[in-house]
Amino acid sequence: MKKISTLTLSMILLAGLSQTNAAVVPKVVYGEDDRVLVENSDNEFYKKLALSTAVQIKNNKLTPAEDGKSFTINPEKLTESFMNVCKDERYADIINAGNCSGFLVGEDLLVTAGHCLRSDFDCSNAKWAFNYQADVVAEGNSLPASEVYECVEIVNQELSTESKNDFAIIRLDRKVEGREPLKFRTEGRAPIGTPLVVIGHPSGLPTVIADGAFIRTDDNDFFFKANLDTFGGNSGSAVFNADTGVIEGILVRGERDYAFDKAAGCNRVYECENDGCRGEDVTRITNIPELVPGMTPVEPEPVANSSRMPFVFLGM
Image 1 (cartoon, rainbow, N blue to C red):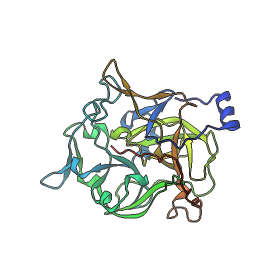
Image 2: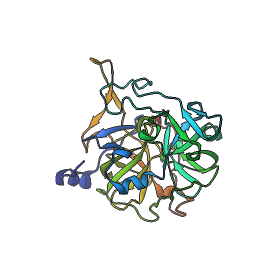
Image 3: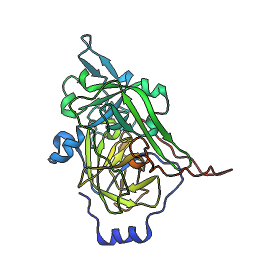
Image 4: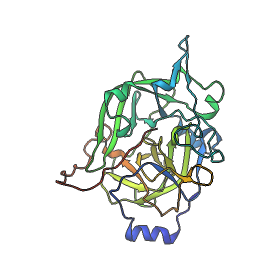
């Protein structure tokens, strides 16, 4: 569990952390590794929030059963994927079929990152599954068809080069049964030091809860930075106020995931101090006009002849 020391918080409040326009990829572990599979969590509050989170799985990784009652997930593990994670790393032997994360905000409305849904093709080329848990898919690598939904419409999507605004809100093919839309901030913004928990699918894994984080900087109108333990696949994850369960934002960018271990010939989780590295970027939930009308910041004017390098967003 991460702790906010008086010195660390004072430094953040006084000076903040420098931001960079260099190309970045998601994500990393800060301080202690706070990731836990949802079924292994002892926090019932977080587990209830997790019920309304979903994973994006590309169609080519799902095979429908002949009777139409389930989908088989085409298995692949972190050690077998392009990430080449070392076998002794946490979760290395769990399947990682997920591409991005999302969360329910209406009976058939789901929010994710804008870079996870750039086009109608992305909408139709993947499905969204709830209850994608390690214990559920452990036997047979399958999910009930009742938990799997299709994207039928991109209601709104933003992926700005200038502001880095990054979100999408989509409509699913039917009302989501048995799961409640999540609560989200509707005014103002959370202060530096606000405790956070993120729920999603790091590296495409089944549902993972990672708490113990906090807002590090809050000097950008479109996003804030936090020390969340997040990875590629967490893009689109709901970032909650850890105390209230209200969504503060959407995980969209961050530090690199893994570092190559030359001796072992494989990749290990990249580690940073709680106040180190670049921090993870979280799009403010209040940027989405369909959810919070009138609070989206004004997009800055494009910079002519800019030499800035673009942000890089990596899928699974």
